[in-house]
Image 1 (cartoon, rainbow, N blue to C red):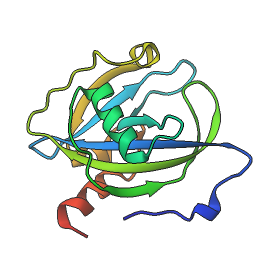
Image 2: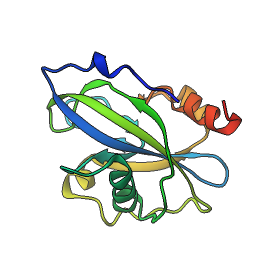
Image 3: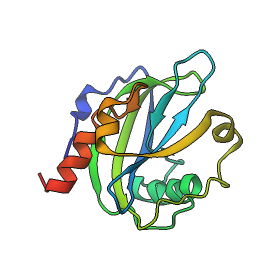
Length: 157
């Protein structure tokens, strides 16, 4: 499990608590969403998003999974934690506390009809990536070590 030191959090930035979902289909491919944000290079991310006030990471994972993919499933236990600083799609610099959950699905079908207006505008594509594609894709993928995270789960390391 990748756990970063919470002491390294930047207190000058708003803490953005988020649940991220690594959704794998029966072939072991990972679901990713492409963001096209004006003024920025396109990038790909896992499903997930910010926790609502008072919401646990597990509850946020369950909610985000259904909202972004239409998949109703138990996200299972947290498998990793990362605390990157980044600029949100709205342009706010934040200190993230991201918890990752692994979800395995039988079919590579998703329903994006529950996307918010902002997601509809910026999440322009989705696709299922093999681990090899994740490692060599020409556009940025977040988290950058996603292929390794999946491999660790596959091997039980």
